[in-house]
Length: 257
Image (tube, rainbow, N blue to C red; front, top):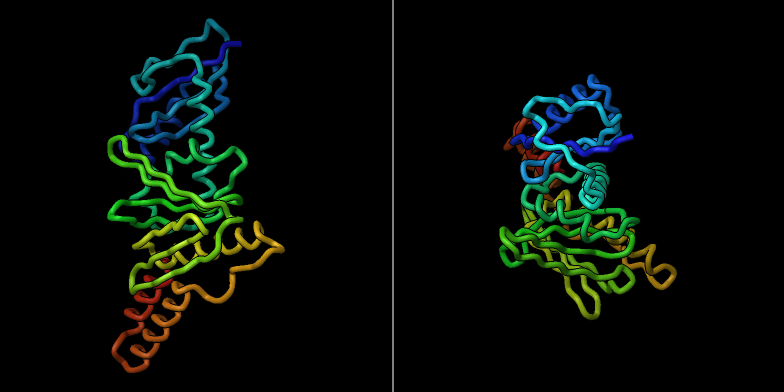
């Protein structure tokens, strides 16, 4: 049995890459190959198929297949891990990850095989886009620059002493402190900030139990959102906002599409 990796030409969109994978998959199956794995990539990270077949079988002649080579175990492992990580992120229902795509792609090189992303938030620190995640072991902040700059900060859950938040109208600041490290992320989307803080508190409570539980009281994000909703209700009751304007503003505050 022969095993090959068929790398596909990149498309400009995820939908385009997915279509290329489906097209190539159908072509290989028509030629008698068995597709055992598939990966939908990005413009800078190629899509590919892992196929099995007999030595004499041919490969598709269409230009969608860039090249066929022996499987790259490290590339395959990294991309499969990235797919798993992306599924975890999708399940969190995070609204704003636009500026941290590079940071997300770096996660397979940072996380252990058994680490699970429990919470995630994107924001700024010193003017640069940062990604903050919490797993069952630690909180990690990552910044990947345009060229070679890579920065990472982290604190173990068992060492976290306090979680502080400050919320504005459309964004907020999160500070997570240990005795030695302070992690700070600014301009976080409020709805994402609420979810992230809740995830951090829950993870810390489990990691530090029965030592102490720091997950007490609402965060500034939660308090601010409640205040904003109350103000909207007052404006609607006074006839300043229409039903449509009230519903639209409420959805924006809660982070609903």
